[in-house]
Image (spheres, rainbow, N blue to C red):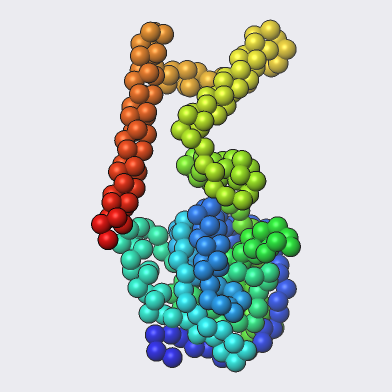
Length: 294
C-alpha cells in the first residue's frame, strides 16, 4: 500500500497484563486525553478504534506525554496498514514547534489490547527504543473512562524467544496550573449546563469565584496561625517558611493604592469585554448587510 506500512496479523503469545514496581512510569497531560476523545469522535464510519502518535520526553524511567496527533490506519483480520507518510509529515511539523518533544509511543482506543496491537507497537519500536502504548478506554456510556499504559516484554525460555507480551506500567494524569484552571472551568461549565452544553462563566462570575476561593484559603491560613499562636497546634517550620515567603512576595501597598490598582485592572478588563462585544456586533451587522445586498 502506497504511503503505508502493512503487516500480517499473527497471534500474541500472551496477553497477560503485569505490573512491575519500579519500572517505567508514564505521566499524561490532560490535552492528550482530550485529543484522543476528539479523534475518536471524528473517526470514519465503521471504524472500531483509532490510533495515533504520542510526543513527549523521556527522563530515566519516567515518560512524560505532552501531546499527540492521529495517524490514519486500516485494520482487518488479515493485516493492518499505517499511513507512514502522514505520520512523518505530522511529526516534522510538530517538531518545528517543539523540537525537544520526541516520539515516545502510540495510543489507541478500546477496552483492551488486541493481536494487532503488537504490530502497531513493533512499527513504533523501529524508531523508539522503548515505546509506550497508551490504551484509552472511553467507556461509551457503560463505564467510566480509564487510561492504561503498557510496554512490550520479550518472553523467552532458555535462549529461545517464545513471543512478546504487553506489560502494564504505572500511569497517571499530571496537570500544570494552567491545566488545572482549565479543567475546573470545564467542570463548572458542565455542571451549570447539566452536561448538555458549554455554558461558560462570564468574566465577572469567574472573578467572583476566584475571590471567594482566595478568601476561603486566607481564612484557613488565619485559623491555622491562631491555633499555632495559642499552642493548640504544634509549629511546622516548613509551613511557616512557606507562609513567610508568600507574605514577602505580596506587594507592600497602602489600602488606597491597592484599591486604585485593582480598579484600574477591572476597568481594563471591562474595556476589553466591551471591545469584544462591539466587534461581534459589527461582524453580525456586516453579515446582515451582505445578505441583504445579495
